[in-house]
Structure formats: C-alpha cells, structure tokens
Image 1 (cartoon, helix red, strand yellow):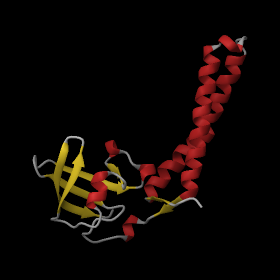
Image 2 (cartoon, rainbow, N blue to C red; image 1 turned 45 degrees about the vertical axis):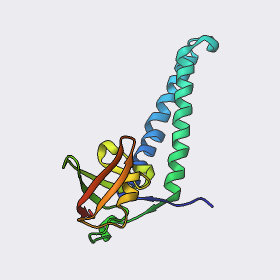
Image 3 (cartoon, rainbow, N blue to C red; image 1 turned 30 degrees about the horizontal axis):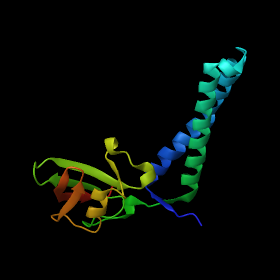
Image 4 (cartoon, rainbow, N blue to C red; image 1 turned 90 degrees about the vertical axis):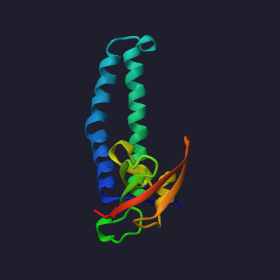
Length: 158
C-alpha cells in the first residue's frame, strides 16, 4: 500500500497546474519537435532528435511522478487549524538567536517544498525541531555549519 503524502490545498493546486501544463502544452510541443527533427534525416547523428527524445523522457517521467503524488495526496486544510503550537501547515516565524534575523516558513509536505518561496519540507531538520513547540520556545538545529538556535516568534495558520 502506498503511503499518503501530506499536502496543503495550495500545494496540491500547484502540482495539478504543473501536470495540466505538461499534458496540454509541453507534451504536444515535444511531439511536434520530434516529428520535425525526424524530417532532417539520419536519426543516429541528429542531435536535435536526441535532445527532443530526452526532453520527452523527462516530461513523461515527471507526468508519472505528479500523477502518483496527486493520487496519494492527503490534503490538510490549514485554515481549519489554529493555536500557538507548531503543526503541519503552520507558517512559523523564527529568530536566529545569534543574529536576531527573522525567517518565516510554512511547513509543508515534501512534494510542495520550495525554500526560495518560504515553503519548508516537514522532513527538514528545522521543521522536525519546530513541530509541537510553541511561541516563545527555543529550538536547537544541527546544520552543516554546526548547531543553530532559533526562537519561535509567531505561529499562524493561513
């Protein structure tokens, strides 16, 4: 039995949007590119053809991966959650105890994590340290640069 993949509603929507794009736009484009490359003759030395086939292989693999994640997704309605305890889906603001720099992350499923967008995987060391803690608590996290301390400043469910 496949295990469920916890996900926020917006994370599921992003995956569905990417799947729709791959099926309705990228797949037909690559099929046209392969057909066009075939017209150039000898396929064994046709770099354009091989590049298009490689891209097609990537697209098909990604489609299968997305379909699997979507099928196994378990959407957690973050707006129904509340409180000051950190749980899946929480948007948490922490302060670095050395620099006082504030960082804000939403704790999300692995499939939707994107650190540049402030979406931190629930399996990340910082997420694991934060789960179950409350505003005002301090957590220690092992990082490649050594131990880092963070204080939880705010917990929101949006």
